[in-house]
Amino acid sequence: MPDTHKEIERKYLISMPDPSVFAPENGAARYEIEQIYLTSDDKTNRRIRCRKSGGATECTYTEKVRVSALVRLETEGEISLSAYEEKKKEADPACLPLKKIRYAIPYGGHLCEIDVFPFWKHCALLEIECESEEDAARLTLPPWVTLLREVTQDPDY
Image 1 (cartoon, helix red, strand yellow):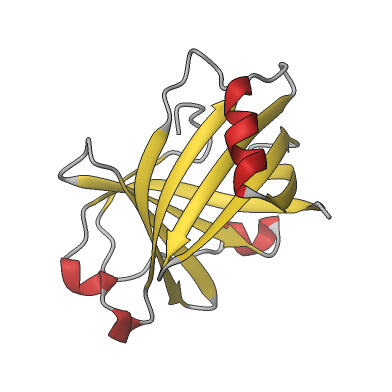
Image 2 (tube, helix red, strand yellow):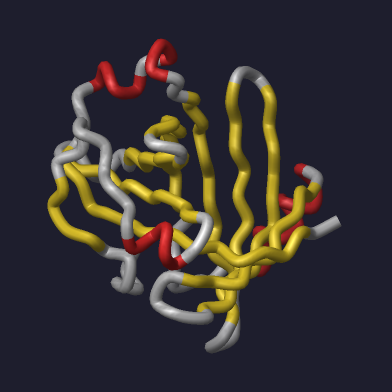
C-alpha cells in the first residue's frame, strides 16, 4: 500500500568525501540504485527505483508534487520486480536511466544520503531529510562535508 507523506529535504553538491566516511564502522549503509524517471505532467514527478543491498532487492514507485522550495508531497510504495520491469515502458525518453551508489550515514539526528555517480569523480550529492521546515532552517552539515553549493531549489538536482 502506498504511503503519502511530506518530504522536507535539503540537497547539496559536495566534494567527494574521504572514503573512510563510507565505512560501515561509521554506521554507513551502501545501496546500488537504478532510477528511472517516468513520463509525468507539469505538477507531478514520477519515478521507479530498484535498490540492491546485501543480496536483497527492493523496487519502489514514487510520485512527488512540489508544495514549496523545501517541501514535496511524496507518495511511495514497494512494487514487484515484474511491475518495475513493466513500468520501464513508461520511461521519459528525455531522461536516461540513472545508476548510482547511495551511502546512508547517520549524523546529528538526521540521515545523510550521499549519492555517488559514475560520471562524477570529484563531487557527490548530499540529501538530508528533515522533520520540519524549521528543522531544515537550522540544519548543520557534518564536519566531513566540503560544501560546493546548495542545490535544494535547483531543478537539475
